[in-house]
Image (tube, rainbow, N blue to C red; front, side, top):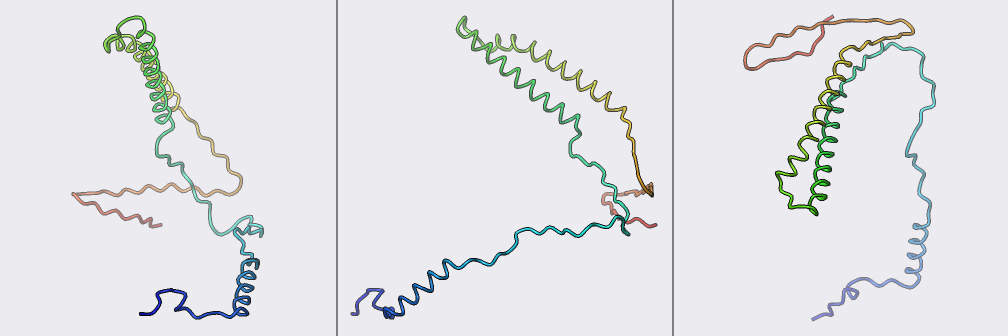
Length: 166
């Protein structure tokens, strides 16, 4: 049976071939890579006007600002109540046998006051938000179009066509 040495099955290189191959590998390792730009800035000036009219970009937020503010305030009130309740519980733990009922009786008035304050603040903020005045200041020619599209949907399955015929 022949020898199972893997080197025995490979062709042998002469010393000159090995030196040439080593020089080639080293030269490839130290050869500089071609410079490929990773970013490009177009410096040509933009036209002052063009054939495309301005496109309205309405503000479509997923959650209104007042709702996000109310949620954050609610989280803050809840965290404060939990923190105060835990602090009171830890303070009372050294003085007497504290039960869940006693902790609730201490923290419930604080939570009620905080909830009422949050509700009043949210109501005042929503009342203030109902009276908003929007001023549009335009410089240049403006074309304003108001389109009203009425698309009745009847039955269980509705088919909507998003076409605007002018």
